[in-house]
Image (cartoon, rainbow over all chains, first blue to last red; front, side, top):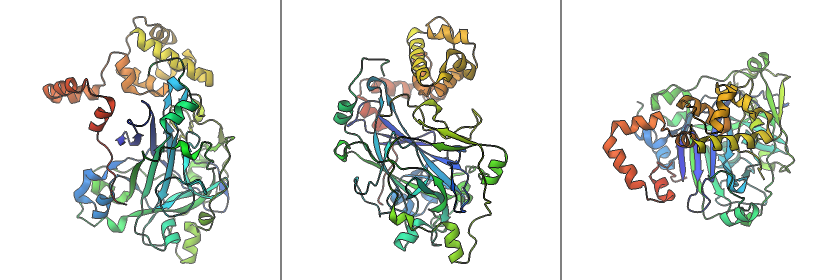
Length: 353
Length: 118
């Protein structure tokens, strides 16, 4: 089951996993990195996007959104986001419960560039493993490099969906989560001695439907699955469609004010605020040949003789914080402490293996 | 403050401290906004009341669920209290009826995100 709580999606499988096993996914606001050919460090988190059930606004949303079900969040055109993954730490086993997570935008897999399919594939690997993969910032275009998720209106030919399929009629993001089989988890991490028990009319939104396109390059690795494929429980998946609503219509739909626009990379860096690098000894995937051919929004705009994005000057990030263990408390992409410039994957404690 | 709460906090904090020195008694107390000696009393189960706000700050710092820590400290979250106060008989009756239900059955009552056709 999936529960929406505090602007996060909590995936649980109470009948097939052990008590406490939970994967939490949130969508983080961030700045858009310049699309200038350089590979940038990880940008900060500027707080979570608000999430709402589509069913709560049925009368103000198009039929297709209701048919898809799921949740929605507000995005400005050209705004970027990243996805934060946290799996719960099971004290009795001294390990975080593993989950396989498949992410798509416009039903194009963000790791492989292939059209959406159910199940998990190993060749090529079309999913990520949490813990191990703390964040996803964009499309996996090369080994150790992604192109940032950037929101663009559907129907203009900028989205990855449009470039790969020739159609832009899905939009949004799609998520499916598979838990590790209970027996596999218990075999790998045997139970330890107990530590601590534990209004707009219908259809008017269609023109504002958003998809995700490829933005600037960021240094980020997608890691190879270190478990056996047979250890994942393919019989117990949970899926969620995440609709991307244009922020300008968010207030009309929900009555709530959307978050303010993120600062530009230059504005952010000029205040000496930090960027982040994540280091891990896990083996990275090679990157997708399909996604490698994706044209970024800027490249696509030049082809179309359009200027689809606001100015976003190159920057030289000088203040870079290295993070090498996202499942420990120091994983926070945060500066200064206790403000909102953060990269965190939530509580975990020791043992992401 | 009761002993199970204090013991739980101490074990959690010490486990985190093994990974990160910022989880010393002194630094956690500073981030939560209480004196180290007060946190020490709490961890030892000595009488030391802690407000809901401080329990929430502690849960945030230790990466724990605020509902769990509030329950261990003998409190009920103020928003939950408010919900019960609006319809006391109904919710009291509901909670009594849910008492014997297994976790997965209770979880079904929590509102799920609906999956559709896509």
